[in-house]
Amino acid sequence: MALKDFYEDKKFVQARIAYIRVAAILVFLFLLIGLWNLQVLQSNYYKELAERNQIRSITLVAPRGKILDRNGQIIVDNRPSFTLSLMREHLASIENSLELLASGLNLEVEFLKSQVEKHRRQPSYLPIVIKEDLTAADLAFIESHRIEFPGLDVIRQPRRFYREGQLAAHLLGYVGEISEKQLETDEFKGYCKAGDFVGKAGIERVYNRILTGIDGQKRVVVDSRGREVALLDTVEPVPGNDLRLTIDLDIQRAAENGFGEKGGAAVSLDPRTGEVLSLVSRPAFDPNSFSSRISKKEWDDLIKDPRKPMQNRAIQSRFPPGSVFKIIMTIAGLQEGILKPGYTDFCSGSTVMYGRPFACHKKGGHGTVDLHKAIVNSCNVFFYHLGQKMGIDKIAYWAQRMGLGQKTGIDLPSEDTGLMPSPEWKKRVLKADWYAGETISVAIGQGYVSLTLIQTARAFGGFGVGGVFKTPHVVSAEELKRWGKMPDFSTERQFKLDEQTFQIVSRGLWGVVNEWGTGRRAAVPGFDVGGKTGTAQVVGREAQKAAVGEKKEEYEDNAWFVGYAPIHSAQIAAAVFVEHGGHGGESAAPIIHDMFQVFYDKNNKPGGTPMQISMRQERID
Image (tube, rainbow, N blue to C red):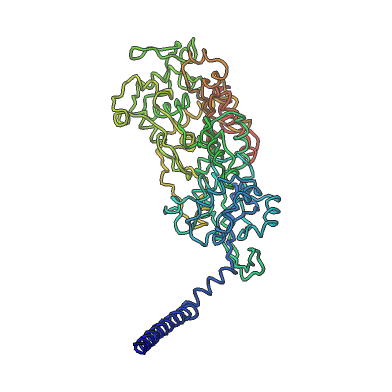
């Protein structure tokens, strides 16, 4: 029995040894296959991973093209700066040290954490931006803490520099980091990537493709601390194209300075071509604030500011034009044949129409007035009666033919249409019928009518060249063709302006500035300036009188002046709107004067002009 047990135990042990041998052989085969897989089949993959730990690709950001005025003066340039980025493969090693990093770089810990989270899911080859515009102290801190923070890279990166600060801010726009939503649009698809800075508004946005360069790249060898030890190769960045505007920086400065602390807008253009010479919106913002990532507090302050500094009042805001609209009424009346040579009216200071009184601004009235006197003295009663005779349909027809109540097509984003009311408009929008009494308010630029600065300047300038209304633009057709972009001037329009209409209205506009009119402060010696002042009420007269303290200025009338020069053949046209500026002749006309004076000094010689000589001769006769 004992011998049998011995043989059975021996067989059991031998069986176990056999199993162990098979298991050992299988394990060996498994290890051999794994080694083959690592060393042969996936050798390139793991070689690439190893090289990634030593070789780093660094983006060399291309500078954006400069923006220049029509004379070659640089308005927008680039400045050198340094940006701190974190390579994504080192993220895990420093996430526990974010407080130290934030303290050393004078950042809020929460901001730093949000930056990490924001970019965590982006492609692994894109670094995480930690801080831009590094100071000397920042650079010293980074260099002294390389061991604690491996994977940090200091990259030289050009930043946008707006040389004139707030000047022309709404025209130029600003740049900012592209959003995920923008990346998905056709506007930026194909040539922009996450982290890029792109145009967000104004010229910077409309002509972003022209201004954007092509980034370069360099490959370097780094040690375990992330320090560069060797340069492998470099592809230099290609700068963006410089863009020359139609803007005259000297005229722009003159217009900006004229506003002082007041809000409002101003536009000047060459009506012969549609080239915009200046475009002002006040209050403004400093686009340099956006060159690096603007803080949430700064952005909230701009957005919540009750004066709305981000709004481009020159093309995005509409205002009742006041007495400026009387010139549109005059042109319409003459073209329709309602106003004829020798036409007069009587102003006693007010008139009753449709059962209610309508007052003139002159309490005692103007007495008997002809058309010239009505324009120069801005007689309300004269134009009340003219509006009644014409009716809203004819007024709207001629206003729209001059481009009012429609977009001009200027090459800037978010242009407003303004509003030229009509019975069809009121029925469609307000679901109500038009009342004849509403036409009387429209006749003096009140009621529903509201215009933008750009369309008003275009309308007056188009009249000044005989009825041709060019599409306003801030980049010339020649400049666009230079960069392979075809200009779109599809909003250009014209109508045959009767010579009699041109002569009568021109003389009236000239009289407003050069005779006893309200626009005397717009006059430029030697330059036949013509124009029209306008005053648009913000609140009723009783509320104005009752206002005291801070409220008093808020209730002041808005001031207009629109004009062109020289009166016989316009070279420059402009519109100025001053918020709470009072009378147009007091606050808006001097700004026109400043712009026209600069233009005249640069483009004309002193001396008598045809209109001055003609008017002097008429007075002698």
